[in-house]
Length: 45
Image (cartoon, rainbow, N blue to C red):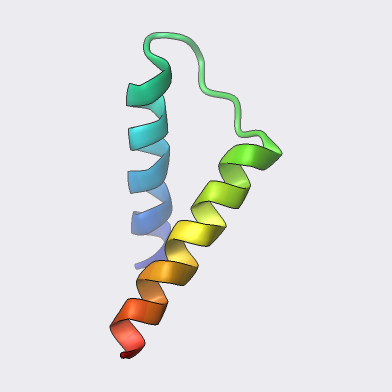
């Protein structure tokens, strides 16, 4: 499930930046971590 969420985040990021090659920077990693943590927190409620 975590892997699927990560792929979803990267797909959204790729759409946002357009046709250029997506580089997984620390910023992208932080966004992915934050999104997954928030999603899992919502599931726990």
